[in-house]
Length: 153
Length: 77
Image (cartoon, rainbow over all chains, first blue to last red; front, side, top):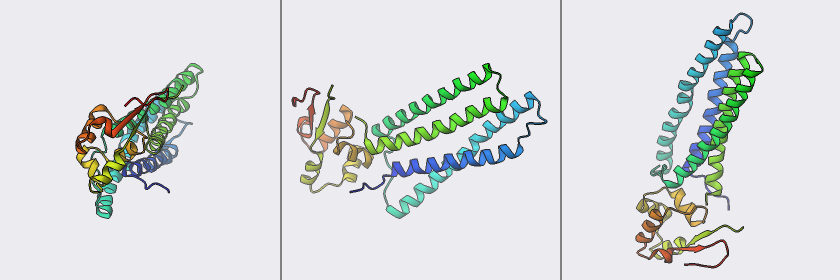
């Protein structure tokens, strides 16, 4: 019989949707405002650095607020409390998820360093960081989903 | 090489304790229901602290709740 989805798994699904939405919105505006023809190197670096900083409030908006709304709606619908989500099992899964994020992000970091060595355009250096940040976040959430389903021994 | 594994009688003990629900056990053990589900299905080996806490809830010694099977397949306790 198919197992009912736990509150932790629903939480991760919201996080995955939030990741797609926040990066989608970020690229929607970043690529509209990006003008590679006129920007100097310093201006371009500033543009992408600002973009990276903007990604923080965007992610808060698309992750934290939906989490709060989800918990309110979930409690009204099921009367199930979301207590002890950060117990030892949850923490272990979270730490494995974080480890997986750092593996991917580290690969991106080295990728960006290689791009600098080969004098790749600023666009690619920053976008390697952003892309691997995105992939790392997805890998973190999907691996946590996997561990909630398969367990940790 | 085969891995060590820990099995448990939590499902049976819950049944014998007036059909205690997973949620009730989770609340008493101060963990999430998902953690109890994972332990019951042997998908997660709890910490020693949590294992003792669960045994205490059922008023049983630890070895009556959890059984350790080392990698060589011989039951230890």
